[in-house]
Image 1 (spheres, rainbow, N blue to C red):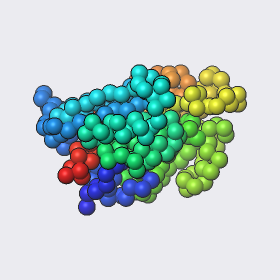
Image 2 (cartoon, rainbow, N blue to C red):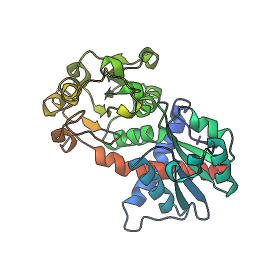
Image 3 (tube, rainbow, N blue to C red):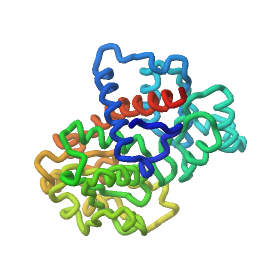
Length: 309
């Protein structure tokens, strides 16, 4: 069984088998990326557009590299330099892109549900590269891929701690939905104002402090404080206060398993959610996540192109 859908919008609706299909496909592209010549013509003659309505470094760049390594023609679109500034709607923008015979649109948008909305209204395949506080499926897939690479089993024997601004994190949601499909033990910890009010829907353990969150964890995923989504919330703690109670440092990482690995989707606020002695330490696999992101996104693009026939 493969993945047979036109779009990739989230991990919540993916089956365990579909997730494993993407992870297995990514292994081939990881091998390619380790060669001197990192190019294959799987997407020759195809066109992808990276339509980003929000800033991005890792996601947009890795999707662009992924498409080019597969041989596709790639265009980067930013809303700040487009007709969006003149009032053009999302639907009209997507339709204009599709009218240019675009095969895949990689969409990042500040509104939750934007990717699903766009996918239903265009013939092009849509990849959700982050929609509001909803989902970011390719990040979750690369997280699982990296876990496998470091020998972490995708089952109940693995414990993952997600710490930080969970309420506003689309990465956290995609990770949780994907990991729960495999029975992975997921723990959550955040300041009260950064924990979703409906967190019980995730069916995860809610921790009371950093000790409980880090203790016996195989993987620790640290999240950035998303002040741009705070909506004027003055209850946010200061950086110093946040680091004291919710930051990961060299002493707290000792509470985790000896071979624990540390993730961060980026960008890192050093000295806030993550100290440099951890970000650059032996437990950190953050740059490996970035590397694996290219392989996973190659797998996504190639799969959707094959589905188009």
